[in-house]
Length: 373
Image (cartoon, rainbow, N blue to C red; front, side, top):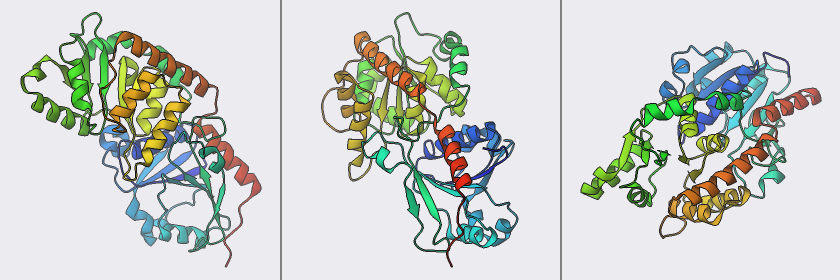
């Protein structure tokens, strides 16, 4: 695709660590591939630590704009038309923005509905399907569903071009010495990024009295741990636990590379844990209708998780009651082999950015018809 193409990415924040995290990684990868990006977001506050340069408007090639600006005629009139519109995670572009685009251009942009990540069997069948716009100012235009996924018949996963090289150059020993200077021989370094799992007290009880060190990320994970430790009373002193500060995405990746076991949540950190290649436990975003149960099971099937991993995930995610699987050496070795095999499969597939760019090039060659009056 020619350099300098302009992309509008729209994001409404539900979980700012995940939704905004994915959109920011995509924006950076587009920029690094020679594209220009405008990121429209209704709550950009997490960028203050996730991407400090962006918060200071010092990120070349990427402009972060308030969602409300997309509804205002005066600023819209000053913006160049984009070649690509992306609606991330089921959000809808404001009608005023769409109407302005219809009124000021001869051809529609490539319009992509970038969906949530899932390993469920129905995903490949919907990936790439067109979605005609049936009403509103863009009636007659079309969107296209784009589903990230874990198999070659989906949209793939985000992966920077230099990711594997950076991992190979990472000084793991130095990182571990800085973040757990008292870690004895045989002690594991465990990161915790979660919501509020009911099984958290069980995990803390497993780790109490062991040489393992728990690194707790800020926000909801730290609050959950503090609550659980307060309820444990005197036993809390037996736990080697350290609270981490907020970090940018590079620092988060390094944490996953540096630890022996990673607890992750949501979509962005799941993908990063896969690329890290270390054993991990995923807490899926909970849904009121329990739709996340099938989504979790589909992922465990795809990764070919051993029985111990499946049971731990089910208890950790509240799919069943019971005791957490003990995190002994044999268990984590089996989990690591599972993750490493899955990562190798993913390395052979096209990444999400490459597929998006190929799709946009194909659509541009086909041409897009203007809306019907």
